[in-house]
Image (cartoon, rainbow, N blue to C red; front, side, top):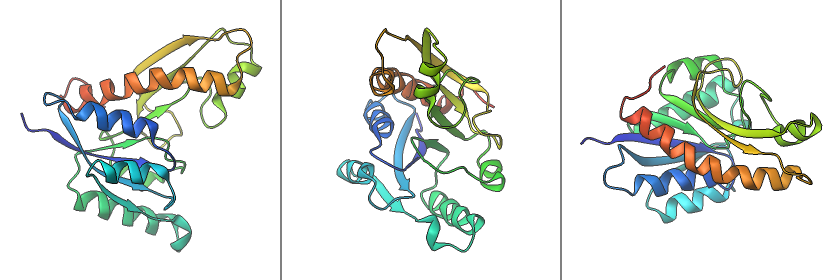
Length: 194
């Protein structure tokens, strides 16, 4: 089996990145994590990736004259790693249409809501404010529209009495760490496609 080469884009601690790295340790997993790229040099996830022998890079968008130049440089790094797929794992930048279209069908994201509900930020706060009884997470293909790409997998959890955005997020992470590696497995083994 030829394993697909995957890069992960992060901005912070990279807990979903760590779940993907852990899944890829299995000899029968169809993907290997070959690089981690962050838009923040201080992202703790970079140290986690380096400790696992994975190539890392960081780029600050503020150092570039335009978003296009920033994203062109990201693509150059990803292509130097010869990646087949890109996973967004808490990458806190809205990506431009040219970058997204370059990786269309080969880039996925995990979002902390049951899309199409609660696109964008502050999903847990918004779900609680609406009084929903169920919350969840979605792995989806990245398309030019924000959080609009087709769903690959979702997981649901009940909203408990007394939940705060923090407790909801903490409980939901367990499901994120379960379904993101499964979604990448489906993609890398050609069981799903855009």
